[in-house]
Length: 445
Ligand SMILES: Cc1ncc(COP(=O)(O)O)c(C=O)c1O
Image 1 (cartoon, rainbow, N blue to C red):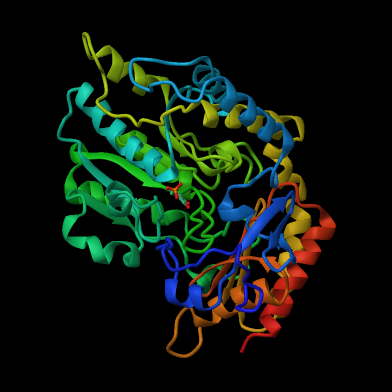
Image 2 (cartoon, rainbow, N blue to C red):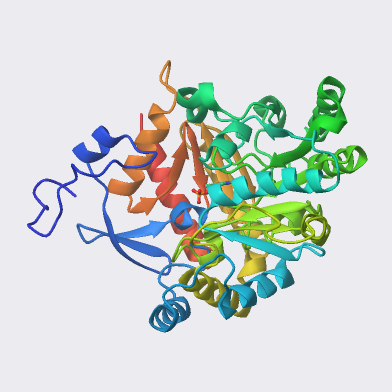
């Protein structure tokens, strides 16, 4: 929106405090989206914008899909809300059952929430409850990973490994936390296609933590199977397998945060299946409802549910939950979304399109500023050399050029471009998107 294009119908931007946004810069030069369909947004100045990020890694089936809209309208006019505590409604049970069918084997108990952050906090609490139920209440330390993103709750930022997200709140983070090293090393991994060969051994850092803290104190390890928010860090070959082995060996729960990798992003319904590693707890949100309405879920292995529920002789077993856990509108949207994913083969489409995606992305190797290209499923990371002394400035300029000049929505985190288009993207659109990124790179100093 430019000052000239603002009309009486355009609201003032002043009253809104925007999340994770440079408010002053945005309000000086706004980017407004007013509608969307399938692979495209429309901006307030009437341009069709190619969506290279599925919104925020969430609109996996493409925008404004009619079956999801219909299901939500039906739900909203039938049952607006039912209390989430000590009451239920059929859609929430149907969704839990349906989800269990696509989750890794054995993970068939589901706790609903309203977002990825809530699903992570629920996972951490469930891990504590499980160890308490088993008679090991001192297992209360969480191990996260540097450069991990687990949302913005105090639990999530404590186990998360992003300094900027923690520093303002550092005096009040959770107390018993440690972090594994991240797995990103361009001197050994640059221009990897799929999983990097180097780095599987980095999981052994968990042994050092066991030596330092004692296995009997560690409740859970939480990682994103593929770290998205800090710039597409793809797990090295063997890394997740090794983490799984070590967790099992030491009685530590393994939590996969699949808020972005869930629902087909890396070529299987979940990254757990794509990488052949089953965690004990798995968090989802975003693609669960195709982002048409907020919803999160914490999915657990049956043994965890049984342990917590059976160890309580009577009454409430877990003192945790949200007013909107399993909300009828969200449950209806999620059921319809799963139906769309299934009928259109979207949960495995990233595997089919992977080779085309990989070849197109790696064609950017010779584009200006590019120091790495990496990919897996329908995810791509393009790392740029930073401008002298101003980390992130070049990345941000590429992002704004892509939006304003190339009609493409891309995402940048610092100087890394992260691409994750809707899973319905076709071959022509892949080339179109990559062409737009190239032009944005060429236009940026
Ligand atoms: C891996 C991961 N976990 C958690 C979250 C937080 O989700 P939400 O923003 O819905 O709270 C995100 C959001 O991007 C994420 O990528």
